[in-house]
Amino acid sequence: MAENLKSLELGGLRSEITDSVKLFSEKVMSSYGDNLLSVSVFGSSLTDDYVTGKSDINTVLVLGKESLDSLNTLAGMAKAMSKKKIAVPLVITPEYLESSRDVFGVEFLDLQLNHKTVYGNDPFEGLSILKSDVRLQCERELKATLIRMRQGYIASAGNMKFVRDIVISAAVGLVPLLRAMLWMKDIDRDAIAEKVLAKASAEFSFNADSLIKVLRWKHSKVSADKSEIASVFETVYANVEQLASIVDGLEV
Image 1 (cartoon, rainbow, N blue to C red):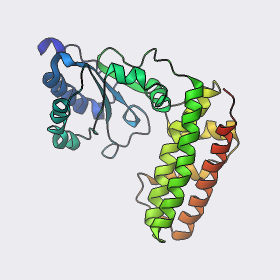
Image 2 (image 1 turned 30 degrees about the vertical axis):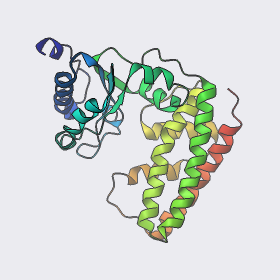
Image 3 (image 1 turned 90 degrees about the vertical axis):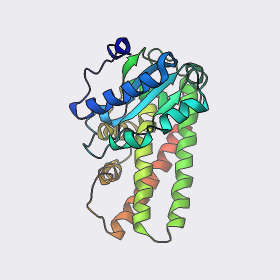
Image 4 (image 1 turned 180 degrees about the horizontal axis):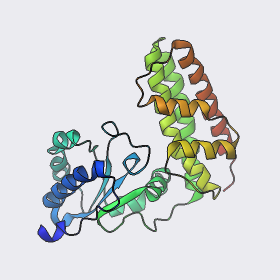
């Protein structure tokens, strides 16, 4: 164990998350031994989107072999890790990673852009992803977002707090899709959400003001009135509809 602990690479992590990541990494290294191939941190905790005390710390564990016992090990840590803001980790194997490039290209592109491997070899370095697979995933996800927004609005029965949550979920989900759309056009991407929206709005000719407002709602206690929420819902829905049409015709 002592030899393994020396292999932790925590340099470059923001100070607010270093202790939590170190504790979590040590626990899984001790629990999984040689079956643990790597531990990586990803997401907002590595960018300026991070909000201390509110944002989760997202991680990926790569295991040599996956089993119910390996899941039970993490289940036993869940409460303690939640207190440290460690979200439920993604657990994958090298075989799963390789065979899923065609269906999770958007997610893997985000991981390639914004992650830090703190233990083991970087599982995402050199991972090859096809533009045609990403285009199809983007189209499917955008059109599924339209369905969820429609169904959610109906189910809300006029509860604007519920509608606000629907719009926030849609806006958060749009960011990785927009990064992927920029990648398909060979345009540099940014890890920070608002910068992604600004660049994508210029490239794909849509107004991102409402989306930026919604992302700020995510961690804001400021309440919007019913008419504003309804207006923002309508605008964001139109944004998603426009982007779905754009990606449908995107040649890659």
